[in-house]
Amino acid sequence: MFHTLAVPVIAAPMAGGASTPELVAAVSEAGGFGFLAAGYLTVEQLADRIGQTSQLTSKPFGVNLFVPGTRPTADISSYVDRVKACAKKVGAVPGDPRWDDDNYGAKLELVLALRVPVVSFTFGLPDVDDVQRLKATGTTIVVTVTTPSEARQAQQIGADVLCVQGADAGAHRGTFTDDGISPGGGELYGTLAALTLVRNAVDLPVIATGGLMNGADVAAVLAAGAVAAQLGTAFLGCPEAGTSAAHREALAEGARRTALTRAFSGRPARGLVNRFLIEHTPHAPAAYPNVHHLTKPVRATGELEVMSLWAGTTYPLATAEPAADIVRRLHAELIEVVNSLAERFKRS
Image: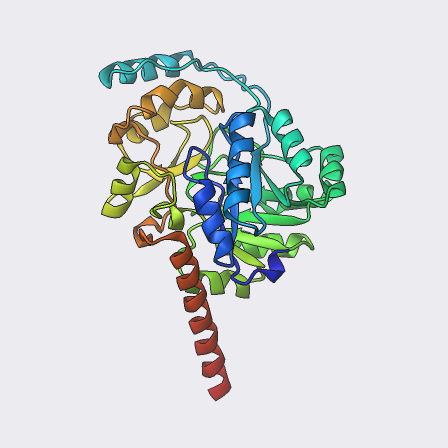
């Protein structure tokens, strides 16, 4: 279905509040495609957001699910103590560092029952049986991958489309497993490199994501074989996005560098560098979602230096335009680039 988009631009699912029904609907209404993020929501909250989005647009939209991993075995007691000390300074009480599956099974049943047209999966692979059940309802299956190996595994279980995530992407890396050693949890490829490698590894339509901000970026990934470009950070400043005021301010200032860290969630993610990230990154264990639950109350204080300020590497180029205006601008820039190249090579 992504081949037929009027504008080959997808609003990435951004868990934690940024992906609102208003944002998703605005992007879809403007000719792109929007994704709701199911991560961290209750089943009831997800059902409500799907319902709200359906009321705001008659256009198709998707839902993204976090595939639960295995329970981490790392001893996180020392990290719990570190977070407790930090929490005390900002007047917070750390959360319970528990493991859970993000209500994955119930959310899967919900999207099945509602016949959501596109369901994407991040952090791993859905079961083959679940893939077949979704396909039986007409749902398109998208799997987020970061390497050719992951792409081949996704093809084997019946994925229809792959979302190829480069290392420039903001927020969580979509790696299937975290090696607990490298900053990104495994092999790191830039967006174009990842796209090229995956395109040569499998025969499936691919979406490119990671550090894409303007029409020239969209043109570049389309030229490299993608059917569409997925943007997340580009939409964080939109009035429709659920981005917090402090996060918006930090993005608008554009003064901080970005880095990959496990400090906030126990899984590699890219965000703006602040005090929490600097102090805790060297000690953070590969223990998702335990660390996420542990640090959540600290992050919720709204104190800039302890928040998870997710952002891709090109975040200073993001704007605060309405989402529909961004989609239209990206389309106009894309057409300008394509026409410019066509004219250049026609002359030659």
